[in-house]
Length: 517
Image (cartoon, rainbow, N blue to C red; front, side):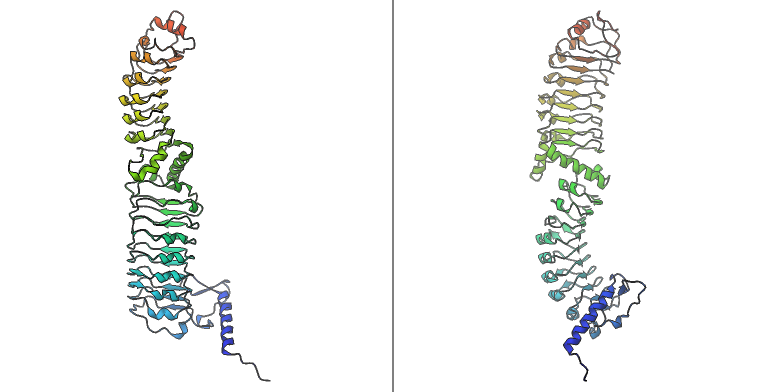
């Protein structure tokens, strides 16, 4: 009986089946490794390449000083990995067009000046490494490489990239570091939903050019060393993935509050942004955690109206400018009704304090303020000003405009006289002057008929200034402890009788005759 002889077609099918079985057993190694194949079982023997059923899988002509490619042997027609790096090629090799099964192409470290249209013939290409060349033209046909997952074009001369990159929906790594990219990237790149690592640092971009809304797998975004005027916005969708964000050496003025949502962010680079004011430089210098904390505080203030920047080691307060581009942020600040800057190292408040039109409570306790700006007087809703433990010697006359100010705390400053403008604050209910250098109170205080609490302990009073107190008909608490009082005016006894709840001080309270107990 005659034996069955398979047809050529059957042999091709059998060969393909053997090839599939071979590749299941012999997994391709990473192209950085010298070994073309590794086995799943390290103890199992690895077949030599010549035994691969359809020829050699790896064509390696790297580092041979080639200026052009010789004819590719038939044995390599089905090569999956082609290494041509570190040669002297000036043109993209046309000889590669026949390698339609190629999946990895390394042509880095040559002098190639363009990537031509026939790149589309490599329909199975997953990894393109073309760094360290002179590429200035990248064909739009790159978008037809639908299986492309990694594209490395670092250190070239590209001034733009084709929008067709957006069609490479499987692309996970796009590296364009150190090119000549200008303006912005194509908007279509915002559709690359598989993107994990995007590097466009060391270029001339002024804006990223696309939203990150759909890049939900993005882990690394490097856009430092450009000319960016603002950081990418709407990064909330990347919050669960992004780990590294490089924004160094740009022209940023402020970071968007949306960055506070990046819960997995491990490394944030902001150095050498000389114009950056929000967050302040001293916060940026303290690292990623400090920046995120600052941004989260400011973001929370958008909803609550209460901004807590205490203990942030601030030396200055940076408010939005009056430029049109700052209008949205200016509006957000205008809604804040409570601002705490307590326990920082602030030496002066900005003149733009009048932008805080809704401010009701301002806490600047424990700083290094010697003066307050006159623009505070424009805050007509301000009810509480805590400026204790500073270096203040006087208050600006413009603060007469604080018509709602009910509590003024000036303890532990450098006051030698009560500021004249205090006598014009008719809404005051509490005035705290402890720990200064006061020796007298102005008679004008008597017009503050709504005052219920006055404290002036730890000053230099030689006697209780009765002339300044007689008109304070609603005063209930009065403290003058730890002064140099050696006599108490007789009329102060009558004062105590008229104000049965008045507490002169724990150390110095008057008896029924008006003398200290």
